[in-house]
Image 1 (tube, rainbow, N blue to C red):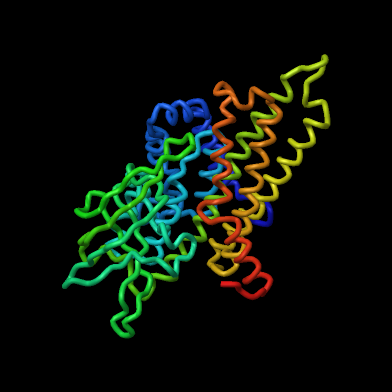
Image 2: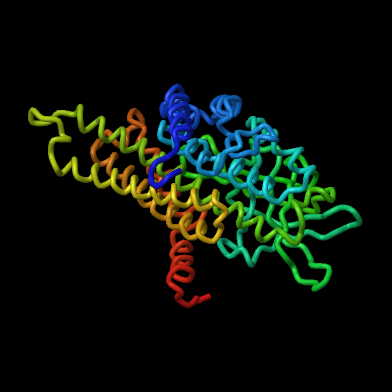
Length: 386
């Protein structure tokens, strides 16, 4: 990306993905969600076309692109009404961490499957008692000969029922100091001692949330991602792309809702004029567009910084982008619902289901309050209260 203009290659990627998304669309997505089905057809086709592996190195069968390219894919699918939530987790977090910090065998074993979309890998960091305080994680791993034994619980983990494995954030004992340090492990979903149960959510989505239970889960030595010494930088290497992808997902959702609101404002006629001719209707739609475009620029900046290797700069920009995108998506959805009036809450128009989905953007994968903490402390240099 040069300045504020995306490359011709990325623009072409956006156009192709948008075409794919329109072939499925929001009505198809909601039908799947309300029927308790998955969006596997779209995932599989996007994978075969190479869209899910655009950020995987070419030597492993990927597109050799970057997180900005993957974010464009996520945004365009969401803008078509059929966003793939697991894109935020599987190719963005897990593939990135393995690509940057995994062993040669881990890269060879996992990355080709990320590249063609044949693999879905979940990511588990949040715990019932730790919440956003990752320093209080109690999931622990201990060595037993050449193996690891994991114990702990995780909550609000997306897509475990579709995943072949879960990348679990735990803590292991440092042999030199005896202190617990972060460690990442790849846990097959069929591993003995590993169980999960769904969390009932008031969100209409094919993607489900789960509570995980790890009871003496025994893993081989190579389940540890990379080196114990690199766990902390590996974790942050995955969390910046997560925020960038979450922002793109939210922006796409907002674009989808705004598009429906604009179309309704053009075609719905009251008192012999389209309702969009009235500023009371037009201005909120215009404001929603402005907020979405501003959030998109910050998201593109965050992706450009990350892809240039500036992890510190990307951290600030990615948090800001995620904050702005969440607010913009909520504004766009709320405005679209209001423009539709009562129709905005009917199943026919498909906007009511977006109200809860958009609201999640303020909470996950990181809350707006934690982002404000980050900016206050790291951008403004203000003291911590915790």
